[in-house]
Amino acid sequence: MRIGIDFDNTIACYDGVFHAAALERGLIPEGVGTDKNSVRDHLNGSGQKEAFTELQGYVYGSRMDLAKPFTGVAEFIVSALAGGHELFICSHKTRHPMLGPKHDMHDAARGFLLANNLVGNVGINPANVYFEITKEEKMERAASLGVQAFVDDLPDILAMPQLDNSVIKILFDPNGQHVAETHFSRVDGWPAIAALLLAQAA
Ligand SMILES: [Mg+2]
Image (tube, rainbow, N blue to C red; front, top):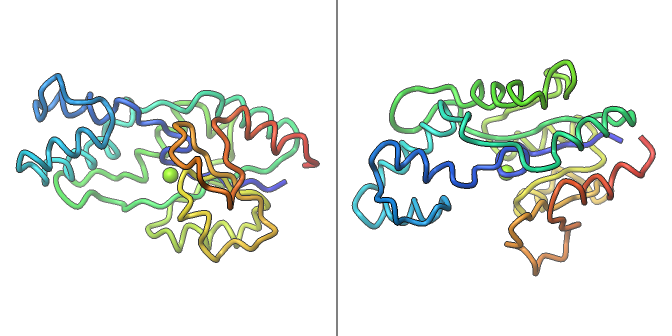
């Protein structure tokens, strides 16, 4: 089976990352909640909206070392490849931050994949990794690759028209943010994705 996988918040987990980076840069006090939205709300609410935009560029461009692969994604990749499945990463992100130093966020994401052995000799073929600029280009890419299943953390992405109804659309929802979503196969983690897809013929 040809399986397409999103990158941000599907492979790469940013839990606590924005909090750690904001603390390191002296942008927030210790007591602010550790999730990204709490950091954003604190900065927006204290007249530092641009600081949050710049913080995103800093994290996605030069602090991907703070991010971690989600539990089970490395095992999924090894099992899928061993079972003869073909894996593709299809993501969209801007190349350079809107504010601050001109980090290359595509290179940083590829560096994260290599550093964690998700791509490379024991992982996904680097030629199967696509970072596009827009979400439309991302889903056109997935469609042109002929994926038979696609994994993403956002319902809006899975609902886009580029993938037809024959594609198995898997909503990666580790924090239960989309419990009311009924259009897609909603899963709580990578072991569930393995159970769903890897029993099927490659
Ligand atoms: Mg995502």
